[in-house]
Image 1 (cartoon, rainbow, N blue to C red):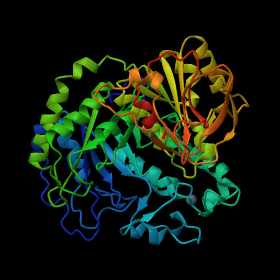
Image 2: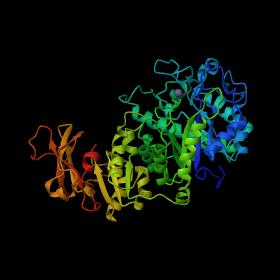
Image 3: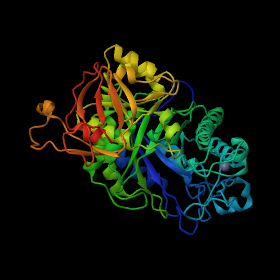
Image 4: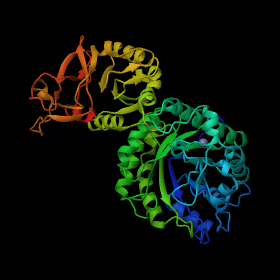
Length: 542
Ligand SMILES: [Zn+2]
């Protein structure tokens, strides 16, 4: 991308239109009318939309000489939509599903396909097949098709989808050759750790290579990859991408989810957003979220100084947005635009830095995606405690920690090289430190034992224990809650000897008489000065 031309953050209100249409749908886009399309868009008044070039069924929504157009598509839907949008002053991002290819291409090119452990091609839930970017599909289909789109259509950006699906374990010849060892069949295989590192490096390279290719043809076109560098991958964005985005699961708590993901992205240099959606259940239903829900989700984005992205669906026959959906979007966008000036030149700040440890994921993870339970729990505890929080990777700490008042480490047994030193220096300068879970060790041999004032002495025998805010801290317990309960905390506690730290709360092993001595679980090192919400331990110690 040319410097100074990244328009993504300025496109405050964006719409995405899903239309994954299988081949048996005979009537696709027959009722499309570009003028009516523009008229309906104006009801919502987006700055940009995301519109299909190639769907997650693998079919192109334009006449293509490289890929395969939907068999019943009789018009240049992408081209007509671009012209209508640009006439209306709306930018268009072309949606391109990376990995799904339709049957005609899969049958002609079995060498493009991802393979299971048994060597069989990997299929989607529908008619499509899953390709692997480590096969010739990259040079022979993906890049030429992108070139075709970029040279023939005045698109303003590319939205790649399918990144999570690219994290499958693939046994194709290209992967086997590139990895250079036996592909592991699961996390207990001796090559697993090496494979996960290789896979994430390879996928990051794919993002950078492909973005470079796009920019070599159209430097002005922005490139984003759905879910790239999200919390679940505990990784930094690779060079070349122009914006970060993720279509957050519709059925989840999207306000919290939006905050949780943007907390990790908003402080970086790249523009970012989380895609919320109009529907209640999942992407293929035609229900409507209440406008209050959309406004709440948008408020979460605005609080992180981020633009908005709202997902909608198009019916295949007309490919026109529902007027009521546009009215709903328009109302929610109006709410947001009234607050746009507050965040346009603003930078988000926070008191707490939560650590998402990349080293911990790579050393202990049992999936290419991180187990986010502890991080999400810590984020929720911070939010419920009234604290503002950003999420930093361990890789980010040395450079960025000084901006925060305290750092919170949820279940980070391992930290990357230099991270313990960065935290030690941060605490020495007066920063607060909360460790929840094991005392972190650096992969460089460093540890936070000295900073915390404890010495680890193995693990407790039980895999759960009880914690209770003690009498000495009872004044911090909220008045509205008459009972200070013993809270069951699952997980194996570390035993530790105090070497300068003060015990605030002892844990009680399951089955022990309440009040007995037990493994210590909760520490605040002496330099930690931030007040602790007394309801936090039960939420934090996940
Ligand atoms: Zn492969």
